[in-house]
Image (cartoon, rainbow, N blue to C red; front, side):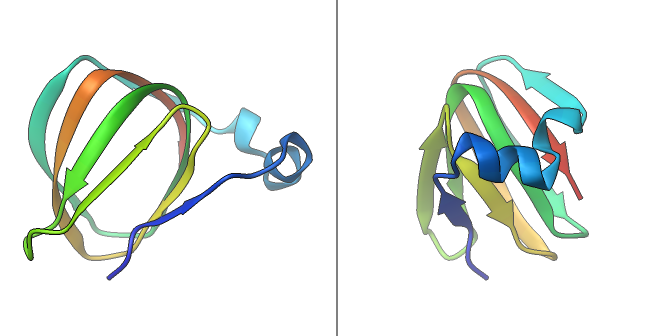
Length: 88
């Protein structure tokens, strides 16, 4: 299971309808998370490191378009407050 990070153009984001997706915000924190379906998100603010059970760490932040695979268990470590559009 791979977390995919992309840099999309404004046009690509608009084509996907990203700016119509709901917004989720979270303060600096650390917590366990499980994805029961694929989720895509676009970070408007923040810096995050996600760690998977096998010890892999993936970091992303403002301007990144991130795809989380279905059935992924992970730990979110938010270093600076997050604001993101998300869709699943």
